[in-house]
Image (cartoon, rainbow, N blue to C red; front, top):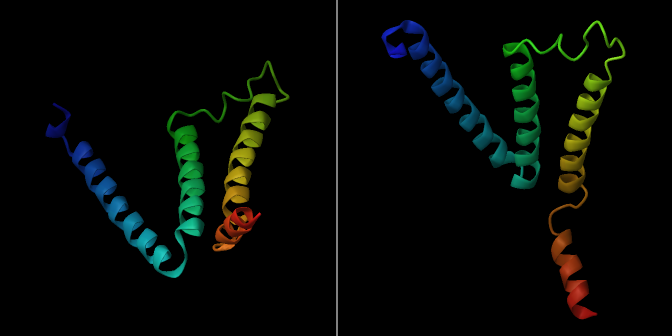
Length: 111
């Protein structure tokens, strides 16, 4: 049983601490901005931090540029894919302001 040691309990405490901090700041952001701005920004930051944490944890920062393949096209494609995803979230979220959807629906219903 791993919970007989200190490290698993420390990890549980850190996880619970970060959970409380994330919820607090997410709620503060929701008080000042709308959900259409806060949730996508939170999604992009969480995804980016998860990617970086996975790269560091599994030590993948050297695997994308092996000595036999010095041009690193896998890394470039991965970064390009991240930018496409984040750009898509940006375009979906900020292309229309709140209230514009109702105006568009009213115009479609009138015609």
